[in-house]
Amino acid sequence: MRRYQIASRAPESNSRFIAVCCCAEMRGGRRRTASCLRTAVFLFVVTFVWLQLHLTNLGGGGGQSGSRQETNNDNDSSAAILSMVPQELHKFLTSKPRNSTHSLNGSNFSVSVEAQRLTIDEIRHRIDKYNQMQTVHNEDLFGPLLNDSLIIVIQVHTRLIYLRHLIVSLAQAQEIDSTLLVFSHDYYNEEINEVVQSIDFAKVMQIFYPYSIQTHLDSFPGESPDDCPRDINYEQAVLRKCNNALHPDLYGHYREAKFTQTKHHWWWKANRVFNQLEVTRYHTGMVLFLEEDHYVAEDFIHILKLMEKTSKASCPACNILSLGTYLKTYDYYSESKKKEALRAMKRHQTLTAAAIPPYWGFQILPSLYQHYQKAEVTPGISSTHHMGMAFNRSVWQGLRSCGRFLCTYDDYNWDWSLQHVSQACLPHKLTAVVMRVPRVFHIGECGVHHKKANCLSTGVISKVQKVLANAAHHLYPSHLTLTFTTGAKKHKLRKGNGGWGDVRDHELCMNMTQVDR
Image 1 (cartoon, one colour):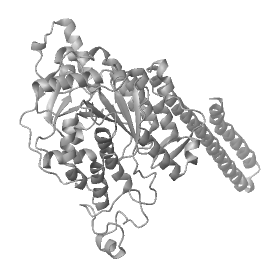
Image 2 (spheres, helix red, strand yellow):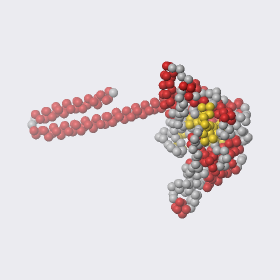
Image 3 (tube, helix red, strand yellow):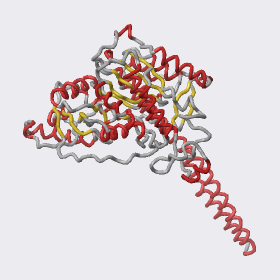
Image 4 (tube, one colour):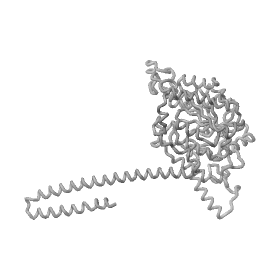
């Protein structure tokens, strides 16, 4: 503030000096007029330059202050998030100081020094060892997996920050100690392994996708030097005789390994859990699929059991359960305003459920709309119902028998490929039971389809924490009411999104189904 006041006085004092100088010169006669003007112009220019430099420095200081303020806001946000996590769970959110931050495919994450020194051969050896051992951690504490226990399969890439928060949310869930958590990795990293292996609230197992880009840097299923560039045209590709030149995708593009990996990984882990792991290969209970950037409500297991029980009694055709949604899909915040308005009405008159007009939009006031007890039955739409999706072995057997349809469908998305399987192959289409109020949330700011300036922002995590804190009194419903959608349009077989035209991808995918080991 003082520096700014000095700057504001400088022009005034310089102006007085110029005026005095000019008057003195003019008393000497006209001969000195030109000299006076030159002096005045010179002093004006010097003053102007001095002010610009000084104000620029002030602006720079302001920018630094703004930067500090932004940092403080980030710290405040992190502190707020941490304050809503029980003290005993802070250990899952704490990074060790020996780690440094690096970048992989645009996603920042922490990499241990030890992991940086591992060669590809060493990583492959460790992956094979993990997959052969099939170790179940904490089995001595929580007992063996029962046939009706819930298996939670989590697909993990490199976003360790989000994975930490998912683990914290799982740790706070009721009945989590009766589950088996299977973490399926497509990137080997010691710090990620340490975090997963530090879990002490449930049985834990790790499996590693053996055909990852990390372990195949210069060969398929990674990118080979002889692969066709994505945007080369068909004629050029044929002349070049690059890999898969004769089979571009639906849109004339050639394979990109970073996009094909996710579908391969999902299909591999499903086959691995249902058909290959000793501890799970005969399990007939529910299997829930999550990803590293998901966050669960504390009653999600209670809700899943309730959905399964209600479906068996009221909807025998229902075969998948969906717990999740994107935060934009479920607008808690605008509905919270309606909640306050209805509270005000309630102070003036007694309202009953029968007195409330029917409104089937998403609400946050279960005492009036009962939406915390409502689930909707609808044809499975992969873009909507894949988050927090659960099904059992009988459903899996149907999907597996239609593996060829999934593996040859020209779409790099595993969820859209499942929908194609439902429409083109399954005798009984996928029918979803979807909670009107979600129990699984998407907290990742970035994904395969889009990037932001800061992919590690924790803003969404904070919002989800607040949503769940406000909803705490409305969790654990005693029953569910199913609402059946009416007049649903028949979904035509749709054209895929492409990215899956390479016959090598088709063969690798189908081999995952055929090989049980």
